[in-house]
Each structure stands twice: as C-alpha cells, then as structure tokens.
Image (cartoon, rainbow, N blue to C red; front, side, top):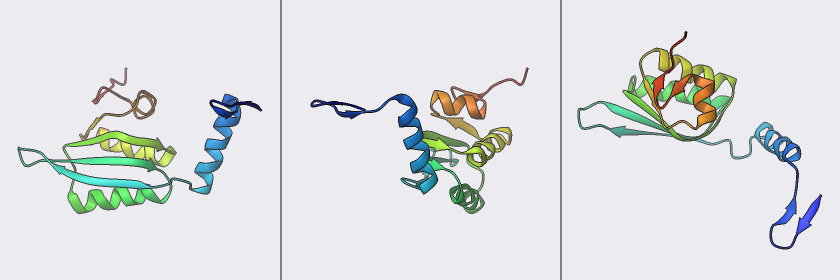
Length: 121
C-alpha cells in the first residue's frame, strides 16, 4: 500500500472493490429513503435514494402498495441495487413506471436509457 501525505493511503482498484463489497455485506450505509413527490397533474413520483438491497426491496414494495403505482420513479440518488433490487426495478419499468435519473451502470442493469425502456430486440 502506497501512502501520500496529500491523499493519505492509496489502495488499488481491486482492494477498493473488495472493501466496498465487504461493507455492503456488513450492511454499512445500507439505508434506503423513499419519498413521494406530487406532480401538477395529480400523478406522483417516488424518489428512491440510497441502497436498494436485501430487506429494503420489501420496503420499496410496501411503499408502492401504500402509494399506488407512481407515474415515474427518480433513481438519481440510488447508489446501489442488488439482484433483487434490479429485478424489482425491471418489473416496475415493464409495468409502465417511467424510471428516470439512473446512473449509466444502473440504467444498463435495469434496461433503461435516459428514462425510456430499451427495446428487447
């Protein structure tokens, strides 16, 4: 491990990825925030922030059951989604919910491009 007085200890990308995965397994920063935003036409958007994984996927389903299907889901603040989270987002997209603001990586996983679902072919 190299150390620089200006930047502190440096680790390689493999060690950084392992540290991130380890923290995810331990549940570090495993928070999810779901908030509802009303649109002028009466429809609503759900804003999802944090990490969509494990028990938080069930929390997303609970929030959807309480609020009804949103017109759109803002994913700009979503930092991570595990396999169950990605599956839930894909299902929402197929059901007609517009998924917007996803990072390029998350958009590729869930099959959206700029908030518009990609064609299957």
